[in-house]
Each structure stands twice: as structure tokens, then as C-alpha cells.
Amino acid sequence: METGGGRPCPQCGQRLTDDDRFVVWCTSCDWNVRGGIEDDEEHDGPVDAFRRRLSRAYGEELFARMTSERPPRPGRGAAYVGAYTIAGFVHLLTLAVAGAGVWLLVTGWRAVIPAVLGTLLLGLAWLMRPRLGRLRRHGVRLERADAPALYALLDEVADTLGAPRADVVVVDADVNASVSVFGLGRRRMLVLGLGLWEALTPQQRVGLLGHEFGHLVNGDTSEMLVIGSAHRTLIEWYVLLRPQSGTSGLGLVETAARLLMFVPASAVLLLLHALAQLTLRARQQAEYLADDLETRIGSTEAAIGGMDVLLLADAIAFWLDQQYVTAGTVHRATRGAGREPDEAVWERLKEYVASIPEHELERRRRVSVLTAHAEDQTHPPTHLRRAAVERREHHAAAIVLDVARNKEVDAELDPARRSLGREVLRG
Image 1 (cartoon, rainbow, N blue to C red):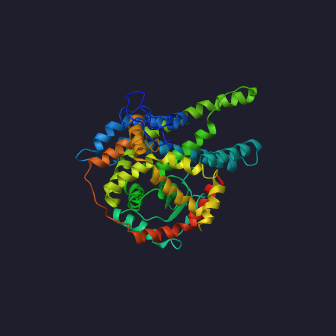
Image 2 (cartoon, rainbow, N blue to C red):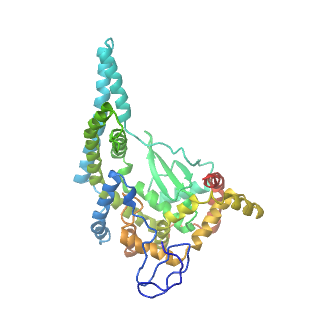
Image 3 (cartoon, helix red, strand yellow):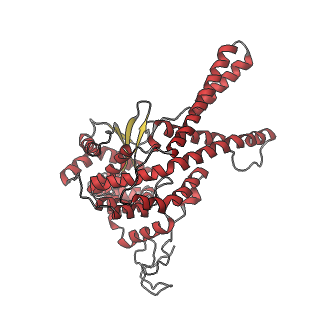
């Protein structure tokens, strides 16, 4: 990474950017524009790497379709049928293993071998069971009685979109937000990461909520009971079966066992790839459609601004990770100003985000084009999502979060801020 902004660019002679807190680069010729940006692929496993390749392969083609005069909606075509077929096979296989275990125990319970095999098969069926999701244990859980103003805002967003309302809200310190469905009762959980929430303007927060509830409107296959649980089950199978890297120092029996697991692990990986191939296009379409609903709820301008904040996600996460290093200094400074240090973390985060210069944001926009940056392997490239929002019809906000109401919502989040602030300062 280059430092020492204000010098002439070694490539074109123009002045370089002058904030040494960030990558120093040339806004004229893009010299060093990628400085400090790692390729996400370096940290990908085989499933994530395959999804990322698919995401990029679909990128331009899906963008063109989604910005046409009549963009497609997620349909129930051949891919949908194929995904259900794979999911059904996964769940039927689990039932077959469980049924075989019960049959052995019932018919051969007096014999040692059938009883042992039956018990082992039931144990295997338990490991193979569908994962229906669960309530988040990490973070601060807010019920309706704890945050009536927040839930009123959530209900208004959901009702405006025609989406089901949230049953529970969990607040954590991450630079993210998500909505998911969990348990047999298919309860809906909204997770709000303060690392993202605090960096957004009030209207961008409304747009974020519109995007997340939009997933419940669009029928994203990742949230469907059959397909979603099958995908989570296959992930669990692969984690259990995959051969570990390296075999040096292993005994003959352990080496043979790992070689035997290679075949079923490869079969599970093949099923995961097939399910990703069948569902990824629909999931990316759902992201575009959720972006469209975000613009209608919070405004087009707020949606574009929110996407710019997402480009800063790694910088915000790094800033939060470093807070425990300066916890002592922060403690003295904030106590002197009459504030608790755990609450001041989030005020300082807002100040940090506000201090990020426009040239750093522009650099990240350009890098997002060069690297096809995406939030994760299931999202379309961020620059294409941003371009799609800009090309579509522009919308004013359907719901305006005014100053008074925003303060009321913020006040209800204060207990979570204190708790999660202490967590950040502890590192």
C-alpha cells in the first residue's frame, strides 16, 4: 500500500489523494486504485468459490434482463423443479436411514449386531436431519414490548410491501442485516447489525428495512422450508464427510477411513453445486427485486447511498475490530465528557464514517467494477445492483423517518448499544 498523499502520480503526473488513513491513489489514471483490496476468492471454500464463479457468469446477462422494460420475476420453471427434486432426495434419504434404524431395533432388538446397527443408523439420521434454522443466540434480542417504536416502523414497512411482519428482532455488532425464517413454526427473525445501522442515515435505514422485508415478498428460495433446509443439511453433511488436507502422520486405519469418506463427500459436494446452479439465478433476481422495493420504501437516493455504505463494510469492520486496542484512551476521554465508553463507540463510528473522504468512496466504487465485488457469493455484483437502481424509475420515499421518530427508535436501541459496545471494546 502506498502512503504520502499529495505527491505526483508516478504514472501520469497528476496529484495523488492526500488522506494517508486510506489507500493513496490517482483519480486520473487509477494508479494504485486496488491497493489494499484482497481478492475474496483467497478465503473461499469449494462451495463458496463455485457460487462466486456462477455469480460472475450470470452477472451481465442477469443485469440486462433485470433492467429491461419488463424484468422477469423469480419463476417456478425447470430450475425450481430441479431444486425441489434434489431437496426431496436429501430429505427422503434421511427418512430412509431413520426408518432402517427403527426397523433394525424393532425386529432385532434381542440381537447385539442389529441393535448396534440400528442405534448407529438412528444416530446418523440425527446428524442428517433437516436444519430448520434457529433463533440467534448471539446478540441482543428485542421483543415488541422492549421496542414498540422500532416494531411500529418494521410493521409499517412490512404492511406497505405486503410482507409478513417480523416476530423477533436481534441486534448484533456486525456490519450487516438479514431476515430469516426459523423453526417448525416458521417464525420470522430480523437481524440488525449496529455496525451497519449506525453508519446509515435515517432514510437509508428505512430502505434497508424495505430490502430485507422484500425478501419475504419475493419468495427467495433460500428461505423456503424444503429447499433451504436441504441446503443447510448438505452443508452439514459435507463438513462431516470432507477429507482433511494432508495425511502425513496418520495411521493406516485413519488414512483408509478418510479415503473412504472421499466418495460420499464428493457426492455431497456435487449435490451442493447442482443446488447452487439451480437456485442462484433466482436468488440473484430476488436481490434485484429487493433493491427495487428498497427504492420504493426509502427512495432511490437512499438506496444508492446505502449501497455506497456497503462498499465501506470492510473498513467499518476493521475500525470496530481495532477499538479494543484504544479502549483505555476511549474510556478516559468519554468519561471526561460525561458519556459511557460503551455507548460512545457507536457515536465515534458515525464520526469515522462521516470523515471518510469522497475519493476513498469513489475508489471503492471503481474497485467494485474491477473485481465484481459482491456482499457474498449469492449476491449480484454490487456495481451492477447500483447501476440497476440508477437505471430504473426513480422513486420518492413511501415512508419517511423523521427526526423525532428516529430518535425514538434510537432510544429503544440504547440498551443494545451499551451491551454490544462493551463487547466491541473487549475485542
